[in-house]
Image (cartoon, rainbow over the protein chains, first blue to last red):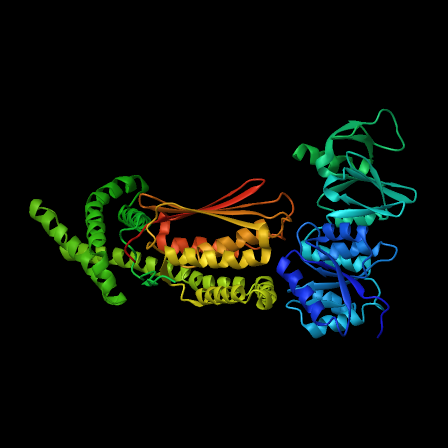
Length: 259
Length: 337
């Protein structure tokens, strides 16, 4: 196997010594397989920042990290035009490892063996990126909750929207938008998927609206017979009112009373 | 490690000087007296009066018994279990016989036999002894569970493999640090495999906690800061093993690991009179947390505290939005049970 230029590698792990170990091993195999470590990151967010700055061919990502874990990182990378290949590293994650095996995704078990690292890197070029639905499933299983961030691509740039800051999601014809206190973001997501992934945090108000439970401030009955909405929900932090369907009126109101 | 002082942690005979044990005996015997009064009265209306009559006889005997048992505790513990129990029965019976004979000498008209009262007293004492033996047996699994829980935690795969991975990366560049880390790792395993039925000194338990935190610091780097606040404490106080370390482990696992910027684990150990107070606090970062772990470690420590100290030890948890604190209060027992 001959490469024109060494593979550019990003090391992502929250433990400094684990990154050091991967660096050492990459050094050991550099004669057989030349690589260049272009950066190190302590979690998924830092890794994404790194990748925005420079081209990366392969990301070696630990599965469990604070802030943003490796599974979520891989999901965001998958939406890139030319996504870098991801090889997961893990000390022990039975569930993820089984899922990787089933779906022929490559991973490395820590402590990492030199030979395994070499094999994984050798086949990385031909590998296909992981299926986002699969990653979402593994991520939910490992974290016990949904992603921490959503990605929004604007004019070719990746914007990350922290889920904790989203007040509501709204579906318009083709697009789903996420509203934070500052602004709106265009998402490439389906409302139904968002509803299941973030069921603890958001509640459906209307066919086309999911609202953060914590953002609900109050309710207003609609004047007269409005075809669009049975009533309106008032939010904390923004002046907009959201339509509430007849069916969701009682459960949504119960939430605010309970708070 | 400092010299290890091992004590048998629990004796099958109850600790008669323990407040909880005394309370249980007082309540138990009085419940029996209440029952006896019910059996003796033909109608319910006479029940309270009958109980008061009985209590006048039972209470002095009961208090004398408890007093003597508290004095004789250590001597009784030195006997084999069955002989010790026999001695307690004889003491209860003998005391009842003596008291009855004394009262009869004061009130010669009273009918009944001192032998009968002695037998009744022995029966009551036997019921209480049986109760304590059952209670002990019910809590004993906590002992082996502590060991299992500790082993499981030690072999918590993330900790083990990540620690080994960290050591591997140290071997070439900083071999001495790697050696120290492996030594700490083996000490942790040894502690987990030790018989949990024996008490260890506070100093040993603190040592173990330090070693554990050093290993975690190796992995987590600057994210973990540790703040020990140990005021004037007698370091040779015997405490049940694996009390501190599992709590430190929880603090790191739930408080530090999920936080990208890390945080501080605060441990304070202080002695207030006869009480040893241990508090372990860690930050909690809002909603971002590991999947809620099962409370095995906490539940196990509670059970073992009940087994060793009955009502004299407490474990409280204070959880606020950004802080989680576990507080343990133990009686300082210079003398081993």
